[in-house]
Length: 296
Image (cartoon, rainbow, N blue to C red; front, side, top):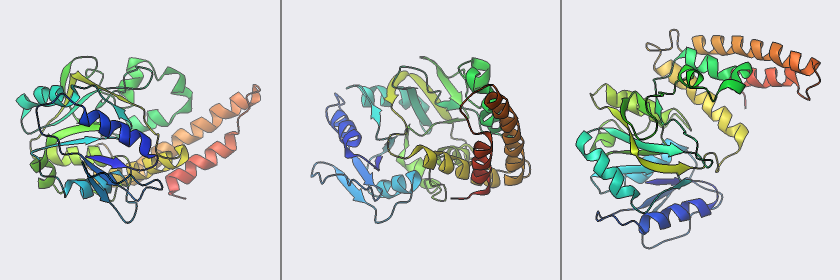
């Protein structure tokens, strides 16, 4: 199940990789075109679902899954690069876990870990992530933990985690359908952690399988400013929905914490400006506050 938006090239490349798999399993490939400005071309050998309006990642996946007939559901971002044994290796590694959500090791285009295993998000994680002064230290393991990355889930380890990022997910199709799929009120981001929270309440774990690897380009189908706005909007909605765990006070507690972080960013950027850096502290501050207010 591949949601498509933007250039057709990466999606077609992934479809071609899946067609050339050495898997003995029968693959049913579904592309869900989310009203893309560059539509996915007609293809008689796969199922192409065409949505009339753009609804975001979760909506696109849900529309595609309505057409799925297989027992296992593999959700793949269109900008993934996979090996010719990817499907077989992943199914083999996931089989002992039964009813579970699993994810492979994800590397970025430079070969760096993308940390797909995560802790359930909290106000503290997002406060740290919002702080510009800490950006230079983000490569350090303590900072990865501080923003919610489960650093036990790295390399070729197998590790049960709170949740796994949605670039590549595998689970029984029945499990996805039993909880109603993705919450379509999340346009982009947080829909996968919301799904896995609901599944965890049913006793279904999330597992990082480091013996299987994919490369993820990331962010190729949307504007960076739109992506950040969608990210913040989704996190605010998530804070409201899961206010009893990690977000005491829901959205208000998250907005208050991130506003404090924005004030710290303003002071930091003012100092950098005074030292001759070509930055605009007040413009950045106003932009961050606009994100928290949900302004478009």
